Amino acid sequence: MNILILGGGGREHALAWAVLQNPKCDRLIVAPGNAGIARIAECASFDIENGAATVAFVEENAIDFVIVGPEAPLAAGVADRLRDAGVLVFGPSLEAARLEASKGFTKEICDAAGAPTAGYARFTEAAPAKEYIRAEGAPIVVKADGLAAGKGVIVAMDVDTALAAIDDMFGGEFGAAGAEVVIEEFMEGEEASFFVLCDGETVLPIGTAQDHKRVGEGDTGPNTGGMGAYSPAPVMTDAVTEKALEEIVKPTMAEMARRGAPYQGVLYVGLMIKDGQPRLVEYNVRFGDPECQVLMMRLGAQALDLMQAAAEGRLAGMRVNWAEDHAMTVVLAARGYPGAYEKGSEIRGLDSLPETSEEMCFHAGTVEKDGRILANGGRVLNVTARGDSLAAARARAYAMADAIDWPEGFYRRDIGWRALGEV
Ligand code: AMP
Ligand code: GLY
Image 1 (cartoon, helix red, strand yellow):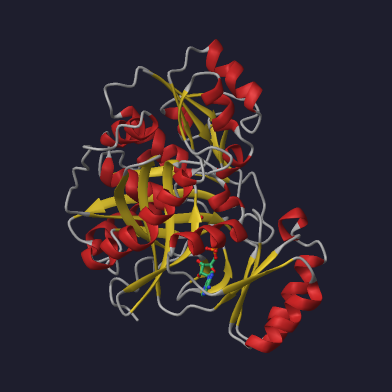
Image 2 (image 1 turned 90 degrees about the vertical axis):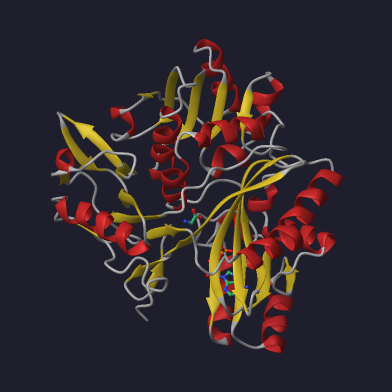
């Protein structure tokens, strides 16, 4: 099978690594890829948000299966164009991808499906939005409706912050994403990410994870794309998982199918759990990054069979073979991230790292130049390891991080602190 993966982050390196372990894979191309991916697969360069360009590449290279990593190609309808051209593709349609692309749409679906989530109101003008905030009081959450690279959510602990967020959003700070605003009740609890595959009808859980969104230790400082993750998430007990499936995920998937927009691909279910009751925070229509890295480390070669079964509508009867172990990934980022940072600094020591089924350094923003690996983004590397316990996985991951010689980078030393009881 000739496979094309779209994307070039740590998520796609982990997907490529898992896919290559499956003997079904004859040839793997990743577009655009990165320096780490280039060591294990072919990389190609074309506009992955352009459906026609993607279809042309697929036809020229006799690709049998396309796996879409990030949300941007999905939100641009690339999966639809591929399906129209008769190509097997893992990833939802443009209509189904609205579960991530529009927060207002997701709220409407949750209402119709009866899925527990935060109370909310939608606004297209500042004055009534501010009136609502003053009436509700703080804490309160203000969200740009559309895709804003993870930055369109303001958790306001006081009314003034929430009012300022309204001015920013309607003032154009988030572009078209902020033309509509969703204001939500603040939910307390512990967050976890739940990942399921869906083939339009059948839902198959493939794992849980916890991310660390804040840049600083002890979950302080500004939000990032994610500074580290581990799997499984202890808060996702069997009872909570069952509730999330029956009360949230399955009714949502049924509602999407009822509307003629069946969901196919991976659904990332962001949950807030309090007193054993999960409520939906958000859906994403793709794997999380860095959550994918820990999921792939635990799934290995079967990840390809599962994604293919989702794309072919064969999830009923599929099973996930779980190793009863733990995985952790720690993100190495360029100093300054998530604010301004420099590109081009050299990273040394990568050749000394182990590369096994239990330890991998997945690349994100890296580029190779004259045989040297250079930083080329904000989040740059993901040291990822498995272990019999979370503590064992963590020790291995940090041993890798410590072996990397990159003075211009940094990482959090406390990934997993909540699960390990270091409060
Ligand atoms: P989102 O992009 O919707 O995941 O929001 C980013 C982060 O904001 C989430 O991971 C939560 O930590 C927080 N958040 C979003 N909505 C709420 C809410 N209604 N109550 C409390 N925290 C929230
Ligand atoms: N790590 C969070 C995300 O991928 O959205």
